[in-house]
Length: 372
Image (cartoon, rainbow, N blue to C red; front, side, top):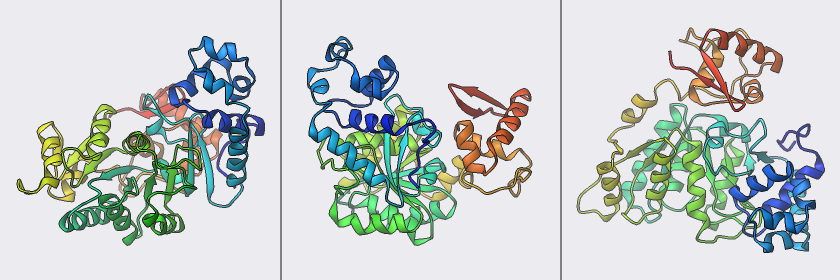
């Protein structure tokens, strides 16, 4: 079954959101402006063009609302969702990744192929050069294996080079990994990694994209997708990068989003190490071993989706199991219920008790674990 909350999103509203999402020059900020002004995508699609112009939305957007390309694209997306293993997450739905929802330009829609539930698991972004050296590729593979084995989901961009090595390293140890595309899922790029993406989906991992299913590989899309890699992750590790590498964009976005940035140093004679050295000079954590990362994130890596009974506590822990989830990342009540496998009334009752004890707080519909 496609993963979206049918109680919250009627078929008409879902179709309208898919149409709104396909309009030219409608990015996240304009999407949210239209939703805020009209209350729903259905109302926005039906509103007069003059109302759109009053919001500062270009005329080309309003004019394209009823075009065959937009209607057919939305219909194709609805048909895509009917196939097994293909899902759509909404920014205001219960299954949207909580950390990603925190960023100012969070994607309104996320298409997901594979297991969408792992998007709520603790993730570590791994990025680097597309033209990585053999030692750089070996390092990325080794770190991904160790981090995935420790319980982290490895998130990267499915590009050639370091990204591919990171994804494969996670799969090598039976770990989970998320590939964030700069194209639509049905217009996969690079083609050389299509088989890798298929293996990821088949082995319990996922491929995601904010772009319409048929969106092609435009240069501006790839820096844009980097904010999703960093936005879903607790931190970002840069393995090997030149000073002009797109990986430094991901690292900058991670720092702006309040995520930790890690960088692996290299030889002063290797151009592919200079980007990492620049990051270290700018305050990134110098990483020589996996333990340097695990020390900072100890206790987070094994928190995530579970089928625990209502009274269960994680091995070695004495605190409430909901706190383990909330100290890893903010969650909505519904996402907590899904992650821990409890009925929603049970979760709400437990959260009320924890809130009275001062251990959790609720802000804008998301629950946060408070520091002890």
